[in-house]
Figure (cartoon, rainbow, N blue to C red):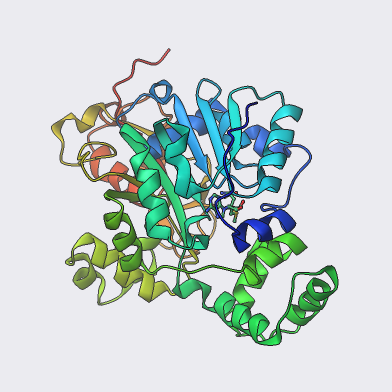
Length: 406
Ligand SMILES: C[S@@+](CC[C@H](N)C(=O)[O-])C[C@H]1O[C@@H](n2cnc3c(N)ncnc32)[C@H](O)[C@@H]1O
C-alpha cells in the first residue's frame, strides 16, 4: 500500500477525536455477517440499487471518503474487480483500514490520510463515491460535498449518509447535557455517562435510540454519538439544499419506503393523497415530519448534469425486460395476517415497523418466483404494478441493464 504525502489539513478537533475514538469500533477480523457480504447476489442487489441500468463489472473505481476503520475493506472485498481508494483525516482510521486489509489479504485497496476537502489531490475520478457518517462532522459540509462531486467519473454515483435532524432530537439533548457538564471522553467519564444513561426516564426522546442503536454499547461508539466535537444534522429540505449546492441530483433514498406517503401507516391517514400530490421533495419532507423517528438520511445522488443515471420510469415500454431482484433482507410473514391477505412482506432492515406490504395468494406466489433472473414479462401480466409496489417498499431492486447473465 502506498502513502500520499500530504501536509496535515489543519488542527482539526474531529481528526484528533477520531484518533482517540476510532469508529466503527475496530475489529480484528470480519465477522460471519461481513464475510457473507462477499456474496455475488448481495453485491448485485447493492449495485442495482445505485445503478439499475448499469452492469456491475462496469464499476472499476471506488472512493470511500472518511473510511473509518473497516468500511473500505468491506467494499474492496465486495467488489474484488474494482480498485478502491480510502481516505480519512484520522491516522488511526487509516492504520486500522490497512491492518484489516492486510489481515484479509485484500490487495485492491489503498488508504491515504487525506481530508475529504482535498480529494482532488488524488488526481483521480471515481465511478462510485461513498461518504457515510462524515459530512456532518466537517467544518464546511457544502465544500466537502462539492469536492466529492468534482471527482465523480461520468455516469458516476455517490452514496451518502448524513444525520437526520428530528429523529436525533434525543441525541441533541444529551449532547447539550454533556457540554453543559463539561464531560470529556476519558475512560472514567464514559463509565459515569453509561451509568447515567441507564437512568434516562422512559419516554425521553433518547430512550428509543438507547434500546435500538448499537451506538451506545461501546465506549468509542458512545463517545462518537454524544461527545463529538463537531456535528450537525439535516432535515430533508436541508439535505436537498446540500445536494443542489454541490451540483448533485437526488437519485433515491437507500431505503425509500420510510419517506413515501404510499407506504406504511401514513398511507392510512386522511392526508395520504394530499401528501402524494406534492412535489416529490415536499412529500419526503412531510413524511419525515409525520414519522419524527428518522435518524439518518442515506441516499444515492448523481451529477446534476447527468439526467440518466439511476433513472427508472415505470411507464417505460421496455420495462417488461427489467429483472426484479429480491433484497436479501426481504421477509415473508404468513402468521396472523388480516382477512384477505395471504402474507405480510417486510424488509428486516427497516427500522419503522409499520412498513409492511400485505399480499394476496397470487401475489405471494409471484413474489416467490422473483429470482433475479426472470423478467417482469416472465412473471406474468399482473406483475407490472405489483413489482412497482415491491420496489417502493424496498423489497426488490431492478436490474434494467439488459446484461446477458451466465
Ligand atoms: C462516524 S465515522 C464513519 C466511518 C465510515 N464512513 C463508516 O460509515 O463506517 C466518521 C469518519 O470520518 C472521518 N472524518 C471526519 N472528518 C473528515 C474529513 N474532513 N476528511 C476525511 N475524513 C474525515 C473521521 O476521522 C471518521 O473516521
